[in-house]
Amino acid sequence: MLKFKDNGESYSYGLGVERFSSPLETAIGHSGIAYGFTTLLAYLPNQNTTIVVLLNDQGVDIKSIARTGLEVISNE
Image (cartoon, rainbow, N blue to C red):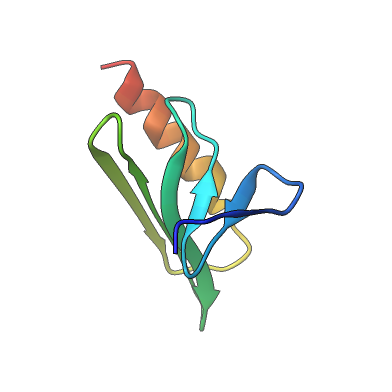
């Protein structure tokens, strides 16, 4: 399940799980868009930190929002 396939972009994917680049470390999670909502959950194992972003909008760069949140967390 955590055997990831590289897709040539800034993230890879496995069975229902994605691997994201983040300012702190590689994060594991899932993102999606459906029915006017956009979601992202990312877990950073070495930091023992999880970030969740939920938006009632589509067409928003949710990974950028999560990345900004992680930058704020890393500066605390």
